[in-house]
Amino acid sequence: MIALKSKIEGKTVIFGNALKLFKEAGLDLGGGWEYDHGMFDTILYQREETTIYLRVPFQVVKGELDSSNTVIRFQTPFVIKHVMNIGLDEEDSPAMTVTGLEQFQAPQDPDAPIDRQREFAIDAQTKLDQITEDVMFAST
Image (cartoon, rainbow, N blue to C red; front, side, top):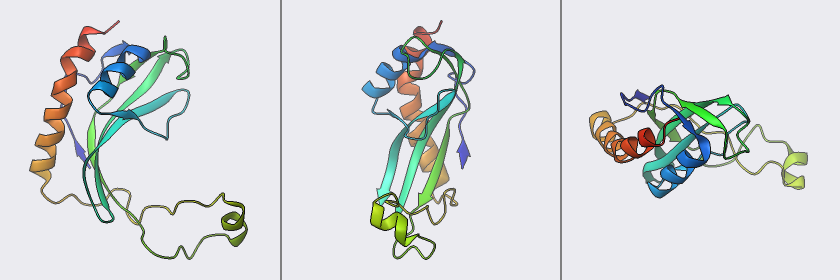
């Protein structure tokens, strides 16, 4: 994982405004969000089973994440590498597979070491800087 320095860290914004700005910049609300936290993310690099993401986590300060008026505070953005598990899942449950509940395997390494760290950090920082000023403008 590579932590990024950014002016966005610690900034408080309206979730609906941030969602719009991040979507316009190519970042989506990550699927693992909860009512009290989440993250925006995008793929920086993908090849075979390796994916490198830029992630911008946030905490909910006021409200719940299912409302566009919710207030969020950004945390430290980071770059992370996932190496997917290709092949048979030896820990899968036949019952879960048959019922369709076991669709995806856990990553082989959800925080793998990143080669070319400097290159990915620069790419991520550039993408982050593209939206920082707009997000800061939308601050509460």
